[in-house]
Image (cartoon, rainbow, N blue to C red):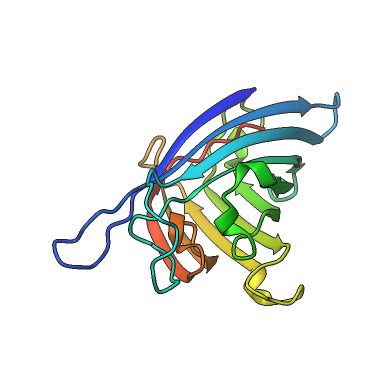
Length: 222
């Protein structure tokens, strides 16, 4: 299966006139290969991804005082990611369990020289998800989760801000709780907590603690 994701993130700042600065452009192409064993509850999916991340700007990366030009500095990188997803049916709790691990690489020729030493080029991603299903849906081809929990962690390798190899600043964490009420068809409610480096363009050297909530869809695909 191939998936094209034209992801764009827009952030509004709490300043005069509430400005929206340049978005994060993050298109991705991902190819999945599903390896299924007959009559086995445990399945594996291998995947590879090519992704781009930029802000569409062309001004100098640094200001005259040496600080990052967060408003209009040229930020751009491309990377590849490869990983595996393990899927398991837990009949005891009537749930689907997912474990994902992958490694992300930003090749030297695909990333700006200005990012050397201040932006991680090698990242290890892990994620674990549990989707609690209604008992009547456990064998359906299209399943909707009543409740799901997803935990994610990323460790950033390589030379980075003179941090030690064991520094906890290299760790990004995310926890998402999802609830699908019976009165909604395809939409559900979610709340998410994120702690780690900022993912918005030139703000990558900032640390974030974010609580996000809203509406989302949650359909099982593997």
